[in-house]
Image (cartoon, rainbow, N blue to C red; front, side, top):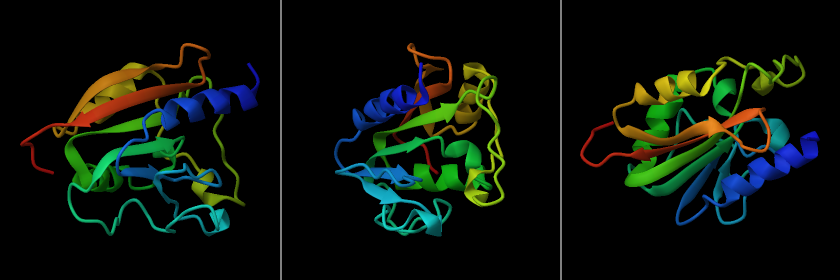
Length: 166
């Protein structure tokens, strides 16, 4: 399958999760209509609505119904801080939908021209990715598997539990 088709499949899957107040983390040059699109990379202008870092979100607690991202989580230098912030702004029973590279087939993207492309995390299996999400007791993972059309990336959906503090 060609990369363009892979990108399209991932894009359509994420678009199917945009409903209500949605935060698109690391939108790059492809913002999603109907979502609040953020990206800290100054090279991405004018695509994001806000050029902010996911580790320092300016929104109040529990204000988003959905959070989506595509190939962003492994590039986060401080993924723990970012996850805590995403959980903080996610409403109870709201959910995250992420596309994450499968490191067993995805190449490392080390390009000094684009420091945000450096991959700090790498998951080699759905089990490793699930274990990462399950270290946050506020989240309940319902989907964590490769796309059925290709083995290039995982899709993961995690709901925020009621009554569990961030």
